[in-house]
Image (cartoon, rainbow, N blue to C red):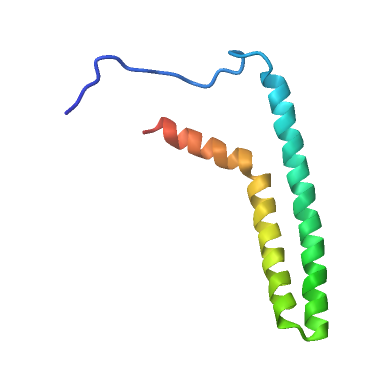
Amino acid sequence: MYVPLLAVNISPNTSGLPGISELETIVGGLLTIGLVAAIAGLIVSAIVWALGHHSGNPNHSSKGKTGVLASFIAALLIGGADVLINFFVAAGHTL
């Protein structure tokens, strides 16, 4: 069994670099932009889906359904980004 001679114990440090609070503000703004884009994508995709269905165009209907699903998944990932990252950080500490 391998036993390291020197154990490294490094954890995230929020005061280690200047500008961390500004970076957190920027990332929060990007999350907002991403959620607004997901809502816009959902609206446009639903319109395309409805128009494709009512005009008898299966290609537009299919693309609209795909866009709606992609918008839902994008909103799920953007909204849960901090939860997902924290989960994997905690899982990484147990390795």
